[in-house]
Image 1 (tube, rainbow over the protein chains, first blue to last red):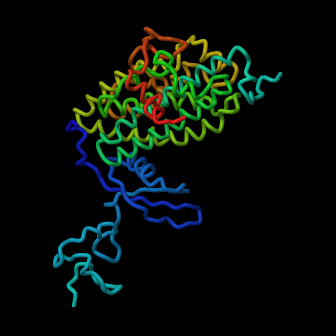
Image 2: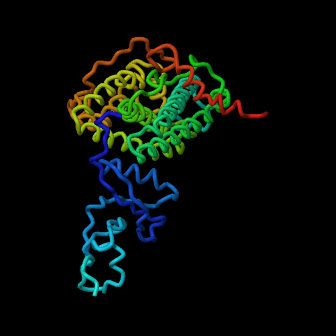
Image 3: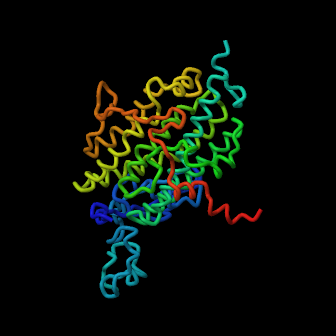
Length: 104
Length: 277
């Protein structure tokens, strides 16, 4: 495949959907796409196991962390222990502690 | 005056349009069946896993649409089984763009944007047709086609982000352009005009062509490709149409038909060889 098809400029989009109008939106997965048009298409065609009432996508990097240092969906990478890994966070109090804070 | 009453079956159609609608439906069905084959060829060769899944979904959509329309032709005294599995290549009404395998991703995207949209414009023209059996089918089909158009728009935009990609895309679009312009029929096309006049379709060939240009014009313009331009609020082709070799019956601009391998796959020859009846 020629260079013009290299996929280095792609972003991850998180996919949310609900089956019925009364349902809450649920995070159902993610797709990688070079632009929002393709993110929408890929999401609809990849997660077609349900007849969704509504589906929406958002770029992963658009999410802002609120009570933790890292935004959602970035926590699954399991960085090495000792470098603020996800495993280290277990038991972090509800208020006032950043994710990477030293455990007592 | 009963001019606006519907036609519940093919037998209710006025004699002067019965065969025209039959030929149009066969053309649309053949194009969808063939286009589905070409989408399926790129399931494994697409630039990303997601793009491959999209090709798979679009292939399934096209085959489904083709099958629905072939089934409708039973009402026109044609045998859907024969149509799907037993015709020779010169009996196909599909575009010459679909005769041979698609060589590049850019060519597939050109078909996705230009040909798939041309087919959708023709189904849109029958959403409120006086031929009633097509209503629901056209709406359902067009619902799925929205994503085919978004796929094309997204990939045209993506390919145009590099000079090399834009050049390759321009070549691919240019190669498919004339055949897609022709797909609506010439200005004085007997089929297209008769169907519009009686209300089986909403519009004559020139208007359908203009709608197609209105749909694709902004996409190719945003990509910096000078194939269409705005004129008095509408998009017009920057390339003159060319009717050399046009067959009014087969709705294509070239003799021949799908090549041997494509034909075998379109007809499902290998699948049928497994049948033990």
